[in-house]
Amino acid sequence: MLDQKLKNRAIHRAKIIRGQLDGLIKAIEKEDYCPNLLGQSLSIQRSLKSLDAFILENHLRSHVKHQMQKKGEDEKAIKELINIYILSNK
Image 1: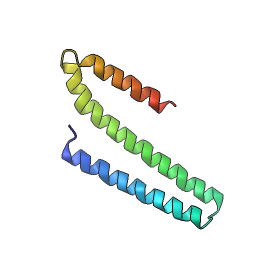
Image 2: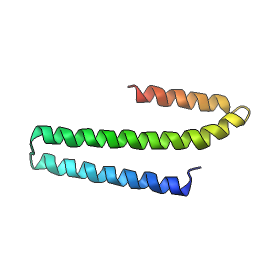
Image 3: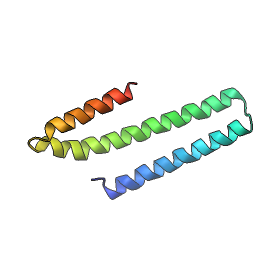
Image 4: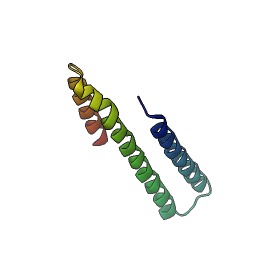
């Protein structure tokens, strides 16, 4: 379960990223200089990675910690983490 404070922080970060993306779309529509567009795009990617790390940390501290303490749930937690690792390296 996501702590309400952590949930609010994640939503806030996601809304900031949405604003960054809206700004990039407008800049593309205005045909801004390509290096500027790339800079904005890279900034969004860094923000997404930061959000990913935040969500992963919450998952590890809450769900995985709980699963590892419950008999039979530990294998599920391991498989989930392996899948996340594989996705992150595609």
